[in-house]
Each structure stands twice: as structure tokens, then as C-alpha cells.
Length: 332
Image (cartoon, rainbow, N blue to C red; front, side, top):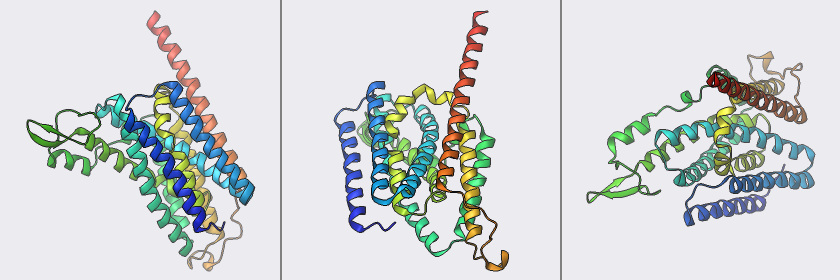
């Protein structure tokens, strides 16, 4: 792909405009969105991503569109898993439901900024050093193993880090929230509200998420434009998806296992690509490894869709069985 500066500028302006509209809606009327409102917004953002992929298909071909759809689906599924941790953060800091939208939107903006930096860094490294794929692949496999070991427990995904603990000790924090404000006056003294700690928790968590998601999508496409747009479209609508799924998130008990398999698959794919383009002198004499198979994008898309579908269906089936068993036990 040869993406001109004009296309980049138009894309950035259009996506920024959508985020500003989102911010305006929240600022005008902070509230907990209904299921209907959340459904319409999620459908709107998913529709935007699908239309964007169609535009890529018409202008750049099916291969490019396939890379975008596969990357978007991967990032979207990883973002859904991130919602578990957001729910834990909101519950732990007792954020009122009507103000959670603002927290989520700020978290999404922070994620976009950090992922933009990681994408630029990753693209620069890949263009100069093909062996970076070995590192990305090994990291994804390591992450997949940890995710599989973690299994159904989401509580372990969020632990207060050093920055959060320091902020609690060093900053003057009020006893309660003042709407969605970051500062308030308490007994005539200007203080930070717990909302600041929540923002720090969301921001630092987003940073950890970016460390997983960016190598994963570079395993699908090397084009910075596709990597960036797939990430943006995956994050847009995440706020409404948080309220739409609600209790359903707790029923996706096998999602972590499914994502572990997806990350492991992409990690292996990256290592195979690194072998096919090998330039490390201590491997095969610095020559490409001819036996390393190439996994086409259509196969990657089918594999990821299949893995996520199996994990989702298995989760819902087991949750339904557990719920029926609990009801039967309670009725005795």
C-alpha cells in the first residue's frame, strides 16, 4: 500500500470528528445509556468499520481489505477482553454508573494516543530489522501461555501498580466524587477526586493492553495505515459495548482461552514469517528458511473467527448449564 499524506490527513480528521461528537454527547448529558442506545451506537461503529473495509476493497483490493478485517476482528476481540478489567476498576473504585462513560472515553483517547506511538515505533523497527518478528512472535506466545494459565479468573488481570499506589499516598484525594470532575473543594481546600486515580488506573492499563495488541496486529499486516485504522475502529464503540454487554461479560468464561489460542496462532505465524525472511547469521547461515510455510490472510481470518466462535458458544453453553444447576440446587 502507498498511502499518501492526504489520505492520512482525511482519515485522522474524520476519526477525530467522530470522537469529538462522542465527547460532546457525554459532556452535554452524562448518563448510563440504555440497551437500545448502546445497541444503536455499537451497530453504527461496526457498520463504519465494515464500510471502511468495503472502501479498501474497492480502492486497494481484496487482500488489503482482508488484512483490515482480520486485524480489526483481532483487536476488537482483545478489546472485549479488556472490558473485564475496566469493570473491575469501576467496581473497585465505586465509580457511579452515570459517570463511567466519561472514564471510558478518556481511556479510549489515551489508548489511541499510546497505540499510535507504539504503531509508529513498531513500523520503524520492522522496516529496519526483520528479526523483530522473532521478538514479537515469542512475546505473543508468552502472553498466550500466561492468558491460558489465568483461565477464567479476571480478578488477577488488574493489580494496583506503583503509579496508582504513589498517587494515593502523595496526592490530596477527597473522600468522595464530585460528579465527573478531577478536582473539588473540601473544607476550603482544593483536592483531587478519586476520579483522577481511576483515570490513572485506566491509562496505565491501556498501556499494558497496547503491549499485547500491537504485536498481534503486526502479525496480520505490516501496513501502518491498516494497523492504525484497525485499532481505531476496534476502540470506537467500546464505551457503548461496555454497557451493552453488561452482565454478559461474566458469562464469557472461555474468552481468555480463545484469545490465548488466537495470540499463540499469530505468534507462530510471526515466527514463520521471520524464518522465511531470516537474516540472522546464526540461523541457517543468515539465509531464509525455505521450509517455513506462509499462512495466507484468508486462512488467518477463518482461524480467528472459528476460534472466537467456539470460545463464545462454549462459554454461553457452560454458563447456561451452571445457571440451571444453581437454580435446581436452590429449588431443593
